[in-house]
Every structure is written in C-alpha cells, then in structure tokens.
Image (cartoon, rainbow, N blue to C red; front, side, top):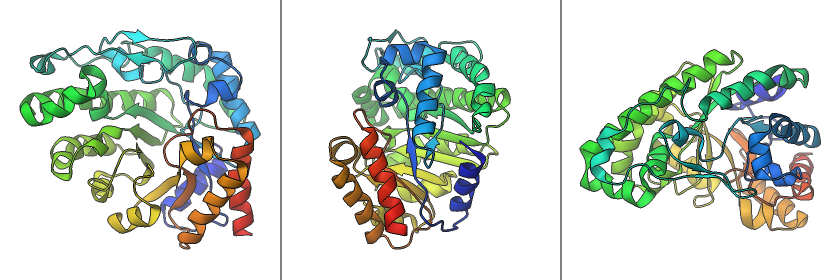
Amino acid sequence: MTDRHWNDLLAILRGQTLNPPPIGFIIDSPWLPNWAGIHIADYLSSETLWFDANRKAIETFPEVMFLPGFWSEFGMCTEPSAFGARCVFPRNEFPFAEKIIASETQMGEIKEPNPATDGLLPFMLNRLRWARPRIEDLGHKIRFSVSRGPLNIATFLMGTTEFLMALKTEPELTHKLLRVITDFLKKWHALQRDTIPTIDGIMMLDDIVGFIGEEDFLEFGFPYLKEIYSADVAVKFFHNDAPCAASVKHYADVGIQLYNPGIQSSLAEIRALTANRLTILGNIPPRDVLAQGTPADVRAAVRKLLAENPDHSRLILSCAGGVPPGVSTENMRAFIGADMQQSS
C-alpha cells in the first residue's frame, strides 16, 4: 500500500468523504495466481512468482488499495500448521489443513504454538523480510499483520460442525481452546509488527462469527476478538462475509474500525445496525457479478450501490469478501471506471 492509499484509508476511518470514494480489494491466493497466469502451488512456494503476481496487480490497477497488500500466506493452512495440522497442497487447487482434534475431550489438550518457530509461520515472515526492500522500491509498504480469527482457526483444528456443536455441549472446553488460540494470535500479530516496523494495522478474517447467534457471539467471540484488537495500531480491519446481522452491531465495541461484509445484508442495513460506526469495504456480489458478470453488469452494480447510498462517508468500494477466482482484468477495470464516472 502506498503512502497515499494509507493516508486515504486513515482519512476515511476518521469520517472524511473522498471524491470519488476509494476502491479497495482483498486479494490473495484464490484470485491472484491464476489471474497472473501461474498455478496456486507455484504462487505459494516461490518468493519471486508470489512477488511478481502482487506487483502485476498493483501496476495493473494503481488506483486500487489492495488489502493487506503483498499478503504472505499459505492459504487456510497458515495458522493451523503451527498447531501441527497436516497440510495438503494440490497443484492448482486451494490448500487445506486436516483436523487434529478428534473428540471434544481433546479441546483442552491443545498446546499454544510458538509463532517464531512453528509450522509455516517462520516461512511467512521470511518471505516478508525478503520482499520488504523490493516492495518499498515500488513505493509501497507492508501495513498489516494478518491472521484468521480464533473461531475460524478452531474450526480448522476440529471441524466446523464439531466446533459449533461444542459451543453448546462443552462450553468450558470451548473456552479453553479459544483461550489457547487467542493467546497464540496475540503473540503472532505482535511478532509480525516487531519483524516489520511499517506494520500499523491488524487484518483478521473470521467467518465463523456469522454462523452463531448474538448470545453465542457475545460469549465466545466478542471477548477474544476484543483482546486481539486491543493492540495499539492505527487500523483495525475485520472480514466476515458470512451473515453478520446477529453480531455486527458489536464490532465497533470490539475495536474494529473497518469491516468487509458479505452480501447477506445491504450496505444500508449494516449502517443502520451499527449506527454508521464502521467503515465498510463492500459490497457488490463477488461471484455472481464481479466474477461471472459482464463489465456492464459490474458497472451497473457499482452505480446502484452508490446511488442507493448517497452518503459516501465511511465507504470503500469493493466486493463482498475477497476477490474470488475468475475475476477478469476487464471486470476490475469496469469497477474502477464506474466509480470514476459516477463521481465525476
């Protein structure tokens, strides 16, 4: 992210209105490798191919702030690998981590990993160390520490259905597991900040908060998220593109400033639920419009969003969730062009 994009982001978070509204996208391995003409396994395993793909994105779309920008990752395997999960890396499919918790009784036996030495995390940090001078030569900086959230990681370790059942059947063991994961995440984000001093933001992704009701969110989500977001950083960014109506009104009290939702609630509905306390990164349909629609469909969706929400403060135009597989350069350009034309 350039200094200009970073300063625009800070201005939007303060409630200032920019014309045209800024555009931002979450980009990572579901979209970038194949868009750049390489296989997912090559993107994840090669520093130079990973760097070149990210460079191609910022040079092709210089108007866009990419979040987090040069995301060093190993897909959904990143954090589970530190807990000892077996990670599977198909050649050109998304990697996945196999479960390590076979029964609810094992939830209280999970040990806290060391983010400096365990799993794939040291390789993630080494990639950032290697890339940092190259990124800065392009006029960009590494701005965010990144992770999945505590509930999300818990489902990787034991399965989504099993974890959601345990919320009800084994609440004490669920809290023990979330306590270990949260302590780990606090140290992991701190290590990223200590390693890369330009980091001044947290980006965390946790769709599982969208699978539980408000009461369960307040017990099993809110306190752990709040601990992580209590870090002294300028930008606190959260992604949950599952349903958010049961939890979103509490996000600002967690400390979240910037939120990337799904399509289940409209921008107007989210603003009403949150009393407009959050900056929203969103939220045209990612698959049905941005990936599968025509450029005309994309332009129409952007214009509709802007027209239906004349207050453009606390808004960064994007899709709902990250950029999905199959989004073309033409559709990205149509998105950018629609914003420019609507605001001129």
